Every structure is written in structure tokens, then in C-alpha cells.
Image 1 (tube, one colour):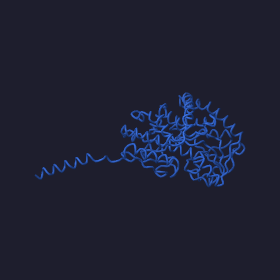
Image 2: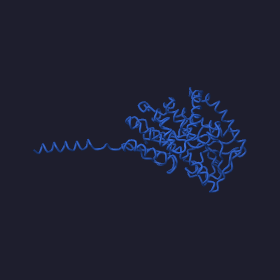
Image 3: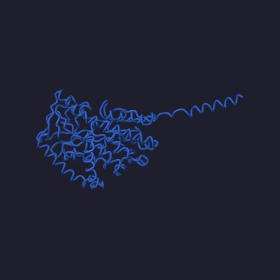
Image 4: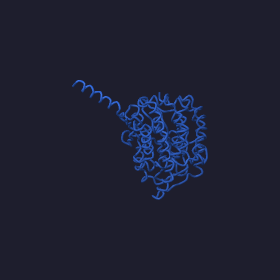
Length: 380
């Protein structure tokens, strides 16, 4: 009788365990931006959506500027120190030549008129995400070599000059030390007689406050995101232009492959939402930030006509040369990539010009890009 009771008790425990819900899995998500910044808002929206889409079985915890900084995120993601990470690919030119080639072309927006300028971030992020995930085997290979899977893009508004002194003319730019975040801006800086300086985004504030730099080439909202408001006294809009697109939700390749097919589909849905929220926060926040800094005494300038004309001429020359230059450096399909990508940017300017909020942008990104990613093959 005692043996029978023991067997029945054991069976009851086993049945209870088998019917209990599976333990939820939480992925750690490293973002090298400060708490409260637009990128963090996108990451938190990603985490919320991932949990909703999986019924709580899979979630993510965002670590803002704590688990890994921007310069550490790519290698940390590769080594499994983070499951998900925001990778600033331009920090790593040798590792991501194809992706950075597309990034370097962002100043082509300068040639597409006011309509493109008005939707620069949402349009370019859409074009980047579509091309990298659906049309760029070179991009997929370079992320795989870093043990990462690319899952989407978040973009900033057009880049301007955020300075400690007035810099709105060619004469004022001569010899100015500009912190730049990509090769195209370095080439532009040299073309207008300035000196490009490369450093991590986490080092910008100290360099600006100590006089090491005259200006940061950056989207205006990031002046506030990185706490540089007290050091920036002058902002110039209209030059150099171009946008920055971060790989917001890159995931460790081994982690990605461990997920079920339904979890990977949910991940893509969350990525569409998170990237849209971050991009729209930048887009809609630009006007608000400009009003705020003007009220705080910052002088906002427009690039003068000569600077705009010089910038446009630079972009034309640069686009003509960059495909062959990249090909000579080993990116064999570079001219074809640029020829494919330019009309895609134009398409995305048209798709985003009437978008009015983050929800609509998330729906657009999901419908046009993220839902089309084959999660049974992408990242394998």
C-alpha cells in the first residue's frame, strides 16, 4: 500500500510539472546610449513587444550604458556578453565594409530635395533595413563573421554642426576640429577645409567641454541625448547632411538559432516596432529640441549658400567615386549595390512622406520589410 501511494504521489508531481508553464527566458540587451535617450526608448519598446508577441515566454532587459558601451558592443555581442546589442557599425570599418558602404551613401539625401530632408531618418532607416536584410548577401556574411544577426535599423534626422563657436560658413570651417561618426563625414570635413576627428560617442562631451573639439557632427537631438547642451553654444543646420543608422537590435547568432521559429518571427515583429519607435522619437523630437536649446540661449544658424553649394558638389563627386573606390578595396559589387540602393532610398522617401506617428511607421516597416524576412533562413 505504501509503495502504491508513493507511485501515485510521484505520478501526480510529474503531471503537475508537465502542465506548469515553461520558465520565461529573458535576453540581455546592451545599448551604449544614456537612459531616457531615443535609442533606449526604442529598445524598451522592443522588449515590451517581444514579451507581448510571445505571451511572456521570451523577453528582454535593456541595459542603458552599463553592460557594454558603444565601442564594446560589437565584440561583446560576438562573445556572448550580451544577447542583443545596438551596434554602431561605423566604429568597425574593417568588420562591416558592405554595411558601412551603404551608410556612407546617406548624404545622397542632400540631392533629393526638401521632401527627402523632411523624412531623412525614417526613409533611410527603411531603405537600409530592406536592403541589408533582403538584398545584401555581403552584409549578412559580415555580420555572421562577427557571430551576429542583423535584424533592423533605426535612423536619426539629418546631421548638422553642434559647436562651441559659430561655424556656418566655409571661412569659419577652415581648420575646425570636427568629431565625425563615419567615413563620408570625414571626407566632407576635408573637402571643406576642416579636420575630422574620430572618437567614441561616449567621449564626445569631455572632448567638447575641454576644447579638444570645435564641433560635433551629429543630429541635433543627440546633443541632448548625450548631455552636451551646456557645451554646445551654436548649431548649424543644412550641412553636412546625411543621417546615421544604427543596427539597433542585432542579436548573437547562437542565441538567434536557439530560438524557435515562432520566437524568431516575434523577434522580427518586435524589431519593426522598436526601430520605428526609436526612429520616430528622433524625427519628432528634432523640432522640440531646437525650441528647447534656442530658449536656453543656443544660437541656431543655417549653413550659408556657399557652404550648401560646396556640400552638394562634394556629394555628387563622392557618390561618383565611392563605388569604384570600395570595389578596389575588395567590395566587388559596390557599384551595383549603389545603383540598386539609390532608387530604394527614393522609394522610401515616398513611402514615409505621409507618415504621422510611430504606430504608422511601425506598421509600414512590418508590412514592407520585417514580415518578409524568412526566419527559417535569415541568420543561418
